[in-house]
Length: 424
Length: 163
Image (cartoon, rainbow over all chains, first blue to last red; front, side, top):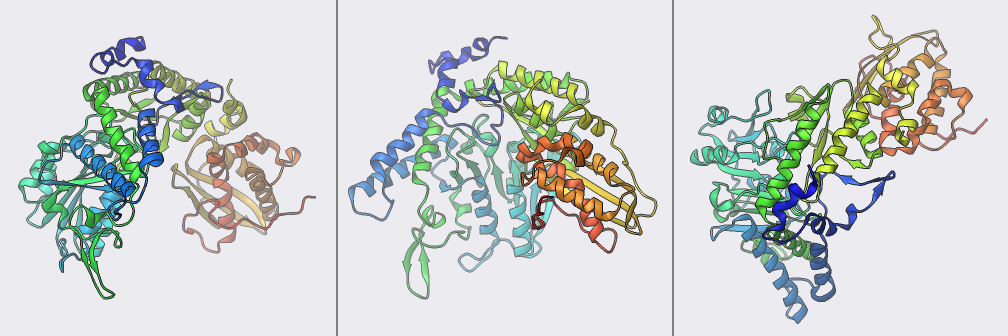
């Protein structure tokens, strides 16, 4: 299978060839231990294309000033750049008039904002009361689990886990069993970073929303492809990161229904989020400012929006088709190796392939693949409870982006086969 | 053959990983401790039978990567039947080699020299040290079933003068 065959869909609307796309990522053109780098760790972070770096550089060299507070020209330009980034990201994720988009430092901050915000006093009330129930799926990354553990402790609410089955899949019937009149929050991932499992999140969110529950979607692994559309989702809070969608690190967004965001106690008190301050007291600003205390990563927001625009120029369908084909190729090739078990084999809309090998530890696989220039991730992937629940220890994980090629997947499969020869 | 294969996965290392020595349990350990590397899932327990200042018997069990298992296996062979003081001296040297503080003394290390390459792979040093860390913890704990411990979390021992 030549790489031109799988890339051919890219030559249509965007008019870019495979090598055009790859050329926009200079970091990929290096050798590691004497072999061409095959960067297959995109679920950890994606690389940043030149147009995104250029947008950030332009901001820093032409428009940089602090935002919102100045009357001078540069501060106005900086504010305009920041607010344009916000509106570009709103459009990207499908936000409508009823939604607000808060710029954060990433998904972790966004999810902490929600969990902390619902379990702390705001306007004289705490949303979560003792005895209330929070349901979190068993697939979650620690960032959408640990904050809820804290929220439960802080508020006296009870944490309940929607466990997946032995194959790591979630079922609506199980959620129906967990929902009670005391359930106030349901938090769920759009895609498990540890297994590549993509739960039926639209259905699950709808079921919870119908029960009057606030819904939280961790979309971190679903904004570079298979991107959710907020306008069609019964979702109160949706969180994502820039660095997982070809944007810079240290950027992200919490987007949600204004009515839901209004309930959140802020996490960062201080400048920019106040209307008035005396020594004794403060009055807080309206959304989204109230949840954006302090000087933000303005260049980062500009970069994140540029990444969103870059994705739409390449084309979402083209990206989806590309990474899903690579995933299918990898899953098939790895599963054919003796003693290799691919997790979530049924997960066709994923860009993540996670696997375990009988008698061989991921740490050794990862080191030996690195020796062949292949970058994968090994360990618990910040999803320790999920892997324990599935009876697994650490895994090896490869994850794909628009710049990866079928040749790189072949190298991964051959590389793993070689590792098995050495170690078994 | 690539560098990590020669540096880390020499035949003797792979052999100890495939067939670890002294893997299992003691009926009545006098000392034991558990060591874990939470990030990678290595989890070992070392069980000792100490009599009159000697390591009369040793076992280890648990799970881990090839480096972790091989190192613990070679460790168990090196300390079994020897004075506790010798085990501690060997641990100090091995740790110093792993952390780049000493050059390896091949004659002294014997088979353990096959792990010297680990010191060039920072992310794997804790793997090679896990069994040793659990061994030291077991020797210094009065009761069995001490809480799990992690290598490099404690301050390093004072630097030893080279003989």
